[in-house]
Image: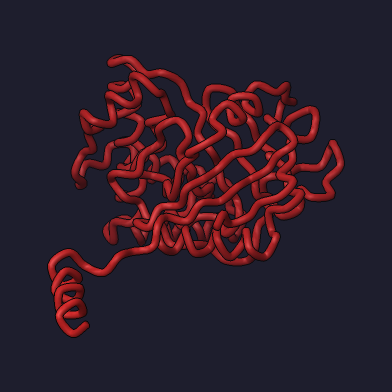
Length: 266
């Protein structure tokens, strides 16, 4: 027995202790069932999503924003009992999740991402998420989207550059004081700086990602700017079916697309 334990312990030292498998979430909708696998590389988002699923937060919520060839979005906490004319997309729980933007987690078809506002820290909504449908990309589209990625990165890094803080603070003060003339002038000046900001490493879509975008598809222009924290491992046809529903001018489905039940799979 002692020899067996020694061999086992030595194996653990060489190869590490066995880790738990990735968490899987079953999301049953009125269009079918989607199974999501959460990434261990984004532990803050993973643990938050687990907590919300286990508390029943997502049960009966709507996919309130659907754009074919782009994504389906859900998680608005007021959507459970919303009537057909309610404005949705602004409600979640009163906290955000720090960004966990991992280079190898990208917006291929089926990617699970965290919605967010345009906040400088790129912090994610507590509850709202999206699942990528996207479309097949060719070389020209990928080059175009690479430019879009870098424009968003320029604005992110420029906004967070201490050299631009006085201008941003002045703009916020002018808006608070409702000085529309000064606000417009400062906003124009800030946008000019952000649009031409250069002090960051330009992003290039990796070749492995390009191949996936050219075969499976996705929405590459969101890469490096939104947190991806999982992916669909079963039910992509359900994502396609939801993405194909008729919507109004606000991208809300004309008929309810509802999450009936979400649960952690054993």
